[in-house]
Image (tube, rainbow, N blue to C red; front, side):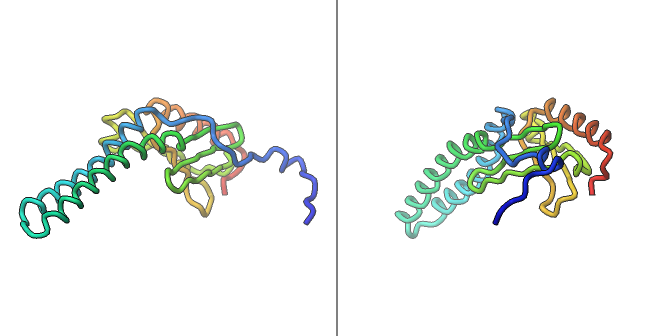
Amino acid sequence: MAMSPPDERNAAAPALREPANLVSRRAVTYWTVRAAGGWLLLLVGQAAWFWLDDSHRGLRVVTLLVSVLVAAGHLAVMPRWRYRVHRWEVSPLAVYTQSGWLTQERRIAPISRIQTVDSQRDPLEQLFGIANVTVTTASAAGPLHIKGLDDAAAQRLVGELTTVTALSEDDAT
């Protein structure tokens, strides 16, 4: 199937590519602490089972050791991997995001399609000085999420995108 030559409108269309900016380095520690909480609950439950039940002691020891090894591996690899994958960028034409760690996703939202820009921080994120930015568009795929930004960078990004979209003559639908 032959493609027609690009017209002027398509020539300026943003390409789906790896965004340039990494998230905050503090996101690594945040993701580690957040994941450690879940592992700690599981390990405390297994330790209680170990001490409260005398049957199948060997199986419980093996289960506890496997859980500790899997938790240690997860806590060592996942946050650093996510840090290397999570990226974002804003150009005059679009917002680019890349996220995930096992399943990775790249998204692009043309500036003209942005409807709202929001910033969120839960209490733990506030403690680590990071924030998340959500860019809502007229897309059926849902909003773009940029997680783990330095709080000041997130606030600058929200302000920049709000200003740029307010100047756009399109109606974002």
